[in-house]
Length: 278
Image 1 (spheres, rainbow, N blue to C red):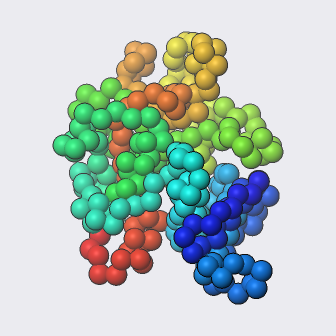
Image 2 (image 1 turned 45 degrees about the vertical axis):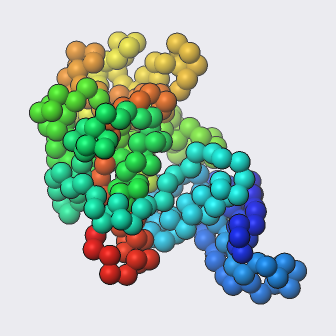
């Protein structure tokens, strides 16, 4: 799949293909082809894989997002990931720190306290602060988030957890069965351990043992109700008399968020805003 458009003096070409999984590339070069209009001074070509299980350099990720955002502005409005706001990044809330990452709960930030948002808007709120929805890669980090929820009687939050069920994922046999092997942290593109196992270094499985269908999570329960896939990972606080636990939830539901520093976005803003204290 390829999309292109002229944005100001830039030609933006975005290629989205599962074939880019093995060789993600981003190319930016000055105009030199004679067949391009003279008004074009720069060309952006972004080979954007729909799902990655490894880390990419910060400038690659942000540049791809910038190209997509440019296309969104040039064509019809759509929903895309937000780029960071340097001033918001410099003044981002820092409620607590774990292993060099700052975190905050949106309910404790005055301008966000009364907001509940869907999963994508949750990511974008965080990204404007050079953060992203929280990713719990370790039991210690998960315990910190569970403690935050318990002590503040938070009913639920979004995390960056996402099911790979979008375009390009259908060719990934290593992600089958999806409900067990198809989950990943969208903030850093790290895979989540199989949902039916206790992960290495963990003493428990954070996925709930029950839910709407009285089955272990993830159970994709809403699909049986209205045909909507439960593709996003939320932490629920005893909603099913199951304590604080992970649940798969349809992404359109609105919830508060916990944001965590994004090294990729912080590095990008630092490199493009010399002297800015982050």
